[in-house]
Image (tube, rainbow, N blue to C red; front, side, top):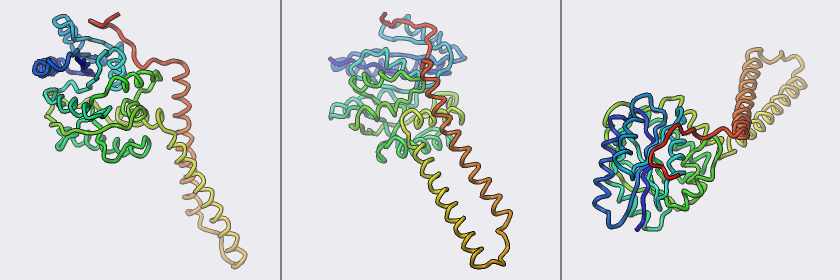
Length: 312
């Protein structure tokens, strides 16, 4: 009998995580002849009583495992903590707000049985806010450009992966984990399955513009050098453009000696534009170097304050 490990990052979910756990229990009771299971709840240093609720759930159910971070490390660090401690043959990651229906997990599992290594939920009508949907579209574009994600693949926070993929993912110990990047580097046998998307039980998404920007930086600086290559191409194009412009000025002066100097405003515009591009590229290079420096200093992906029911 195969075992499934459910992994749920938790933040401001003291009033919702209990319902999500109950839905998982009810769903798995219907397929208990096929699968055993356990649940990993990771508290990402939530300011409410999420840690207390997780502890209470763990006290009542030994198959529920709890982890509480010492500070906020983000959703992807929480997923890595869950994956690193999970012992299931299949790991299923989902949200703590009830938007990703645990009752439809069989759709993901059946798709894995068809020979795929990872399956992502795909939604016809997402119930996120306009800002969150915009961030998802930008994130999808970034994944296609920087990480070569197939255009037809829809990436979401509700997905299932096989054990060998998880084993490869948890080898990554640098400071900036990016889960989809780890999946994409492990296998190409990834697909989607249609899943319903619900309204949030309560509250609003914890993703802010700052968090989304940090997530995008993690993705393309940790798993791609394409930004540096783009910077090289832009630099080469600018150099050629400057050379051609210089030749134009010389030829113009030779052919029309009485012609006046080129406009001051045009020269200043060019200086400001290319100066800005140089600073932008230097900042990008500095971002890579800074992350290398932090990784060399063994900055942890997360720090666990306490845990419940984890095997020693």
